[in-house]
Image 1 (cartoon, rainbow, N blue to C red):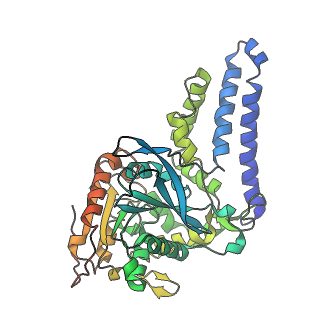
Image 2 (cartoon, rainbow, N blue to C red):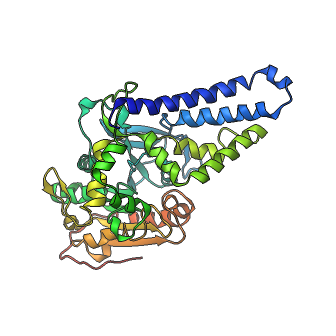
Image 3 (cartoon, helix red, strand yellow):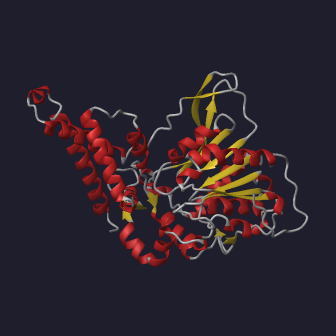
Length: 425
């Protein structure tokens, strides 16, 4: 499958479906068609509208769509984004709020690089903006990065995070969500040894696979059952001629999307059937619940092949973070070197992606951190999405995280002795 032709065939299929949807919508929208009292034409128009929008979203990067935020003065203040650090594979961006005093809480949100854009954390950003200065990692689509920019694997990702933390300074509070949790932990440990003064004040790790073997899920079972050779043969392709990254080896976003949908194919099929009926009846709108969800869900990005394969090999198969054997540029990264950064673990009771226990395993690795700087929270009844963007996040987890940040905002003091005990909330 490692050919441009394979990649271009997938893009051709997507483009064809988008064109077919647009054609059906246009044909069924002619005024003359209204003279034919047959609901089939209205259904054709509805199918075309839903199909065109769905396949068009697959190659579009979503906007943040955060126009304003209400401050303590009761007024709405305009929100804009500013690039603080620009790098080939990802930027560090800041959400600037015009006319508002800078907030004392400086938060770095580490977004996942797992098929979707950083905008997946839009609701998380919106919930934090009133109380924090929010920065986020904005990862780039690998198909748009020329081959001349080189590789990008888990070590490069870790070094990017370390650079972003250095840029923001020691008063930063890092919140890592899902996939980057083990690498955010590694980046902090890397700084603890290489540049201790650049370490953040606190590290909140939400639903990530620090130890995938702590509690098995379909994701971990897949990682254990498939060989690296199988993954490389079936998942990796070369970017086609349409994009700037032509020739780059990637795990294509369209292939990832097919995997996402196959896991809950019946649910997605029903959702699209219902949406087509709603459009035909005139009950749908541009920003209804279906469109808001699928505009984000269907917008996928390519990952570099080396990042995807090294994640499976080193994080899931070899468990290098879980066994504290991770290295960066040939140098060991000892998580036990973290002695001053407060660490909080957040997990969801019903998380079927990173099941309870996988993220909690981080606390056992923090042998140099006193128990007073360790905390954990298991959210009852919450799934994976809910612990960082749903009702559980808004009502329960967010207030706990902000309290944790406030409790650890002072200048850190180095621990006198290692303490292996774990303090849970």
